[in-house]
Image (cartoon, rainbow, N blue to C red; front, side, top):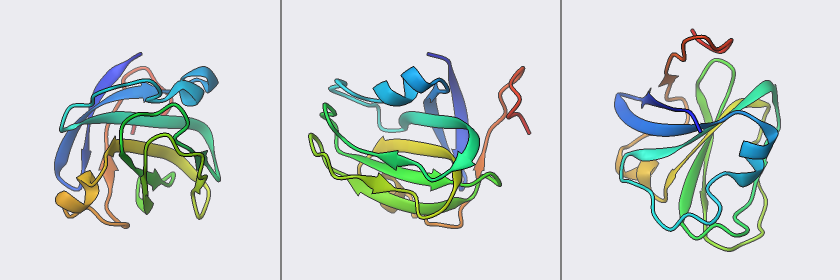
Length: 125
């Protein structure tokens, strides 16, 4: 899986990029650890309402749903091995999963902006 650095409200995170349907389905399933400033950025080809769950996921995570303007619209906490559906409240282009509480610890709230560039990718800005 491709990796890159992103910045969220001034905080740098090393992320794996989930860009294909198979990568979206796999996500962070079966992982046993995730570095402190690491995560997974889900990139969708178009904006739509995204749903996440934690089946077969052993790590407690927080997810930020991010619109096409790269602005966080909602943050949800997700607990391991649950089937509760966490749905974006609006159409989004990205979802960022990090360790549970990362957004709160770093005072990142809805409205914060995410910045990154991926060369050779149509989503670069």
